[in-house]
Structures are given as structure tokens and as C-alpha cells.
Image (cartoon, rainbow, N blue to C red; front, top):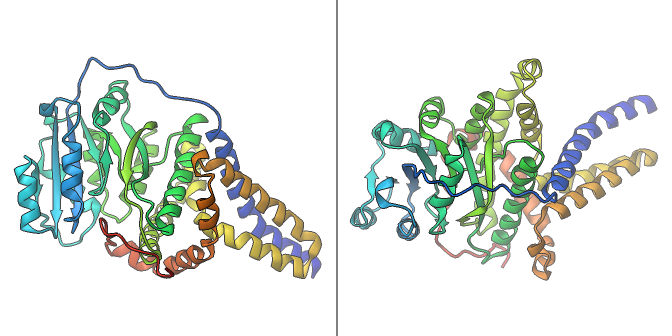
Length: 393
């Protein structure tokens, strides 16, 4: 019985060990000083800017007005808004700003459908690159100048640094920290160690021919994950521009957080399963970035790890105390990893107080797993532009 128990406990422990060591390696990688520098390019490229917008009347006009302040020749970029479910008044305001409006004709609503619709309408030869932004995103006036410098160096895929636009509720504040941990581990930490950065859904730029051809293969709710998959298949390195910022509105209550994560988790599971089918090919072709991504996509949400590791360690301690100590050592390593990944500016009293609400976030993410099927097949809209308080306020 003791041998059987040891085998079961070991089989459960191994994936948690792999996941947490993975976090630790790239958290350390994040702390390695390494900055990408691109010289100012004499060549100015033509960019298509796409804003998919579903019922985003509250934020889209401000976002477009902000983007129009670019220190970049106006004739070298065009903004397209896919206006899904927005009012005639909003569309008219956008048209008055000189924005091209597309009204969706597709039945199955998704961001992928909006992007494909745009690519089917525009003339590919009119542009060199395409920038994807969410309706609530704000960027600095030199955004296109900076991404152009990187694009001119030969980059096919670029991810810029998405940061929180708001921290008006504890949930939004914690979501902002979570975003920065992702940036530290999956983007900056990866690039510092020579691996491509992960995409994050907006603030992305692609070479337009590659993007159009690839998007034609994508129809899921997790278009950014599938784009990553095809980038890795084509062995394209995704550059991460840490100092080029995109302000992104964070979810402001736990219900919206649960709905959002439902879609993310479903997309991650689907892409993991697709990639897993290619495991032998990945090993045979030595596509190590794809292998890295396979491990990354196997990892449950961090909040689940934060809750499950001590729970499992406590259960093991009750059954076989001598086997439990490694669980608590592993948990300590996980805490150290997260501490390294959190940028220094978040080491504040507010962060400490917000961490006390993590058990409620844990429950919200658990609820997300219960709705994975709907997250896979149904468009989940995250509302923007309205101040909302946490439900326990």
C-alpha cells in the first residue's frame, strides 16, 4: 500500500514540479538585464490598424482620438473599426474622424471573424504591416514610430507591452499585477533567454501577408493562441518591445473576470491539445520554442496553483508526512518565482491588502472551469468604460 501511495503521489507531484520550475526559470530570466534596441529607421512602412469593437460605444471614440495623435505620417496608416452592435451615433462620430467603418455580416461572432472580415475587404498590397488593438486600448504618440523601427529590422511578429489602464477596484488592480507577471515570465523572461515572446491579444503587429494567410485558417475564440501556434510552426520569432506601452482596461469585478478567463482557459486547452498531437514532430524537428509553448499551455492558471499546491501538500501530510515536505518546499519556490516576476513598483501596502482577496479570485477562476464549453463556442464580451465595484464592497 505504501508503494502504491508513493507512486500516485509522485505522479501528481511531477507536473506541479515542472510547472513551478518553469515559472522560476523565466522569472529569473526576467531579472536578467537585457534591452532590445532598434536604430531609428529611415524607411517608413504602411500600417493597417484594426480595432474590433463589440458594443464599445463607451470607449472606442476616445481610443481612436488618442491614436490619431500619432507622430507618424497620416498617409502611411489607416484605421479600421469593425463596429459590431454599436450605435449609429458612435459610427457617425468615427466617420467624422475619417475612420473606415465595417459592419459585420458574419453570424458567429468572434474577434477572429472581425479580423478576417477586415482582411477580406482591404487591399493587401496597400500595407506592409497590420496592428491589432482592442477598443479600449490607448497608445503613446510615438507608438507607430517605435514599432516601425522594429518592423524595419525584419521582424514579422511584434508584441508590445500591455499594461493596466485602470486600478479602480481591487479586482482590476490584481488583474493588472497578473498581466505584468505574464509580461515578466512569458514575454520579457522568454526573450531574455532567447525564446519568442507570447502574444497577448492586442498591441500586436504582424507582417501583413503572413497575417492574412494565417488568419484565414483561424475561426476560434482564441485567435491569439492559434496565431502563436502558427508562428511557432513557421519558426518565426515574436519580438517583445518592453518599453512600447499599450494601456488596456482591466476587468473590474469577479464575475467579468470569471467570464474572461473562461474564454482564455478554453482557448489554452484547445491549443494545447492541437500542439500535443505534434509532439513527435516537435522532437524530431527540434522545434524547442514549440516544446516550450507546449509546456506553457499545459500550466493551469497561477491562482489555481496557489490554491492547489498547499491543499495537496496538506492532504499528503495527513496521509504520509514524510512525503509532504517537498510540496511545501515547492510552494516556497513558487512564491519566490512570483515575487521575482512582479515588477518592483507593485511592492506596496495596497498589493499586500489585495492579496488577502486571492481566495475569492481562486473561487472565481474555479467557476471558469465549469463554463469552458461555452467559452469555447460562445463569444464572451468583457464590458469596458464603466466603473464597477467588487461584489463584496
